[in-house]
Length: 228
Image (cartoon, rainbow, N blue to C red; front, side, top):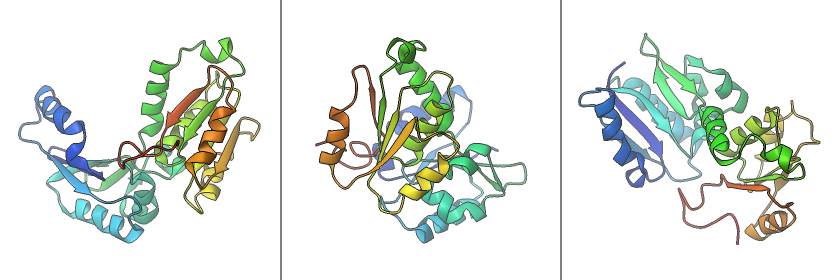
C-alpha cells in the first residue's frame, strides 16, 4: 500500500534514516512518499502510545511506521489495535514495524530478531564461539533490541558460553525472564541493576574475546552511557 511512512521514536529528525529514506524512495520508485516523525520521550505511557497507534490507524495516508525505542510500550499499550501480529512480535512482546494489510488494517511486526541475526553475523565470525569457548556476551539493556539479540544467540547452534543481560527498569525483569523461559538458565543470566557501576563490575568479569553490546538507548536516544 503506497503512502508516507511514520517514524515513531524519541528525536526522529536527528536520525540517520532522514538521509537514507529519500534514497530508498528513489530506488523503490515510491513517488512522493515522505517520512513523518512522531517524537515521544523515553518512559512514555501506554495510554499515550495507544493514542499514537490509533492516529496511525485512522490516517490512511500513512502506509505504516518504523518504531524505535518504544517497541515494548507499543505492544503493551496498543496490541489490541492490530488485526495481525507476526510470530516474533507475539514471542518478544514488541513492535518494531507496522504495516497495513490489504484491508487497510494494522499489522504488527518485530524485525529485531532478523536484524540482530544479520548484525551479529557481520561482527562475529561463525567460528568465533568455537575458537573461544569461554567467551561470553554482555547485553546492556533488555528492551526490545537487547532481548531480541539474546533470543537470536540462544536459538543458534553456535553460541557463547553465557549471555548476560542488564535491566534497570523496575518490574521489567519478570517479563524478560518470561520471554526467555524456553532456554536453560545454564546459558543466560539477567542482572537487575541500579547503576552503571554495577554494569562495570559485570564487564570486568568477562573472559577474553567476549562481546559487549549497548542496547540501552543511551548514546542514541539519550545522552550518556550504560557504563561509567
